[in-house]
Length: 369
Image 1 (tube, rainbow, N blue to C red):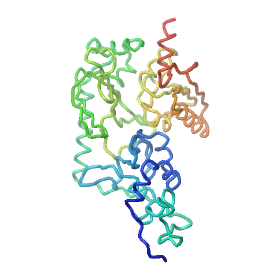
Image 2 (image 1 turned 60 degrees about the horizontal axis):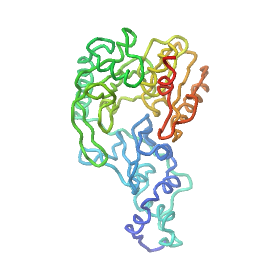
Image 3 (image 1 turned 90 degrees about the vertical axis):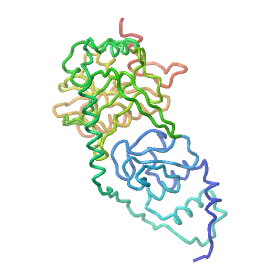
Image 4 (image 1 turned 120 degrees about the vertical axis):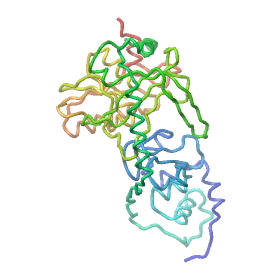
C-alpha cells in the first residue's frame, strides 16, 4: 500500500463542471436525474416516483432527496455536493469516493498503487427509512389537515362562484366547465389561496391568489394529495409567480406512484395525459374520460384502475424529448402487463419559440371548427 495523500481541494477544483461525466461513470443509477436535471425523479436509493433531483445549474454536482435521512442536517433538508451524492448513492466512504473522482478528472494526482480500491462486485445500497419521531407524525397530521381545509373551502368548478376559473379556461382557448358531477367532485375552485415558494437560491415568494385545486388519487381511489393551479387575480392566465402549479405538501410516507387526477368515470377504455389543461382539451375533443397524471414523472408511473382493459395515452411533444419518453415508457410498461394501448403525440412541428406542442395547443387551433 502506498503512502500518499490526495489533495482534496485540487480534486474538487478539477471536478467542478464535470459532474455529469463523473456521475455517469461512478453512479449510473443517477442517470434519470441527469436526463431531467432540475426535475424530480425516482430516488435511486429508496425508489418512489419524485423524491430526488439534481440541481439544474450547480457546477459542484449538488442534489437533494425529500425522504432520505442522509440529507437531514439540524432538522432541515440540505443539498449535498457531488462528493456527498456519490457517498450517499454508493455507500462508499469519502476517501474511496475522492480517489474514484480523481481517477476521472485528476489521474495525474494518483499513484500507481492506490490506497483504496472498490470491490469487483459493489455492495447493494439498502435503504433504511429514518425512524419516525413524534414530531414527524405531528407534522404529517398537520399536512393532511391543511389539505382537508383547502378542499373544504373550495367550490364546484362549474358553479357561478367559480367564474375566475371559467375565465382561466377561456383565456387558454378551452371551453369553460359545465355542471358535471363527475368533475365537480374532483376539480374545484378556491377564491383566495396562500402561495409560498422557496427557490434554489433561498428567495421566498409569499402571496394569495385564486386557484383551481384537484384531488390526486391512487389506483384504488384513495386521496393522496391536492394539486393547485394558481391563477392571475383577474383569471386571465396563471399567477405571475415562479411556479404556478404546485402539489401541496404531503407526508413523506405517502407515495404518488400510480396516482392521477380524475376527469370522468372510466369504462373499459381510459385516456391519460400529463397536465390538467391538456386533459381538459382531450376530453373536450373526444368526450373520453381522461385522468391527468400531472407531470411526466408521474405519467411514467401511472396505473389504470380495475376494470380498464384499454388505455389511450396522449403524450406531449417536447424539444427535450421528455414528454415523448414519458409516453413511450408508460406504453411499454402497460403493454407488457397485458393492456391494449394506443399512444399519440399531437401532429405537426413544435412552433418556433415554443418548448413543446401539446393537445391543448391543437384544441386552440382546431377545437371550434
